[in-house]
Structure formats: structure tokens, C-alpha cells
Image 1: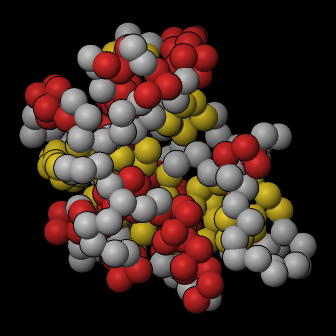
Image 2 (image 1 turned 180 degrees about the horizontal axis):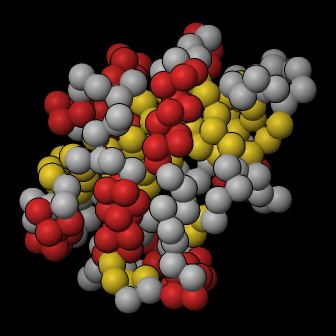
Length: 242
């Protein structure tokens, strides 16, 4: 059982401005409550007991709303960033709160209708340092194509590393992965960097195993005004079940 998770919640949400000038993106209302509460519901249903959030833009608003997590039935801790450290740098900064056991990472602006226990079981069975949840999407390349071989191993991300020529199938990455604690050895401290554009290519170049978990689950995100409206309509019409 995986007990810990990190939610990436530090971003400015510039594409949702001016809404996010005063409200941090994870607290934007979706289907009648802050989007972050939907995320915590997924994590709790998946057996997560401890949640780490990295905070920067309007982070105090998030900390005030969630507190220690007691009313959400999880323990919540915070990793503050100044300056903001992007996804990889944010995960590395939170190492003292996550080290020692596998952990889930979720984006604070997207959500899958997926049982985390299935992903965790897949991750344990494959013995990879990381497992990326991926899904088919006709616009997958727009999100940064994640390409898997026939054995389900991630072989290339956004065209990197070059020179991988065997038959691969492309997917989009909806922002959910599981890491072994050894992932921190591949990350530089106190440096802003993207986990998908820097850490994963390093792992691939070194031949370190990365597993893909393919799902057709419903997915929503709140990255733009259009996607926010679509997520609100979708979760209002038919709430996710886990």
C-alpha cells in the first residue's frame, strides 16, 4: 500500500487570470467545491494517508483552507517555495517529507476517474523506478507525447531520447505518476526544472525502467477557462467514482 502523495499546487495559473489573481488555481470552484477537494477525495479513496502540497502563489490561501487535513481524513503537510521550482524542483524540495517509501504525485489542476490502488499494484509488480499513467488522446502530441513499447515500458517522452526506432505507441500524460524514493537521486536540489522534460529523459538515457499504465478513464483539467468550464459541467453532470 502506498501511503504518501504529493499534489503540485504552486503554479500561478496565468491562463485563468484574472480569476487566479486572487484565488489559487487548486481552490477554483468545480461542481460546487474547490477542485483540490476532489483531488483529496481521490487520494483518500486510494489509501493515501499523508499528502504534501508544494505552495508558492497564494499558498497561504490553500494552507488556510486545508489546515492539517483532519477534516479531509488525511494528514497534510506543506513544502513552501521561493522562488517557484517547477515540477521536478518542487518534488526535490519536498524530499524530506516524502523520502523512504514510494509516493504518488498528482497535478493540482487535473483529475482522473481512476482507482489509485490499481496503479499502485501495477507499479509494484513491474519493479520500475517510476510509473506514468497515460491515456489515448487524438491530441496527445500537444501535451508532449509519451511513447510506450509493446511491453508497456516508457521509451520516449516528447521526442527524447532520440534514436529510439522500434514500433512505439503514443499517449498523453494526464499528470499522475508513482515514484520510488530512488527518484531523488536523479534530481538536483534548489533548481527549477521539469520532471517530464529533465528527470524522465535522464532516466531513459540511463536505461532506468519507467513503466506506463494505460487507462481510458475520464479525465478533466482546469488549465484554461474552456477546460475549467468543461470540468465543471462534467463533474456536475456525473461526479467521478473511485
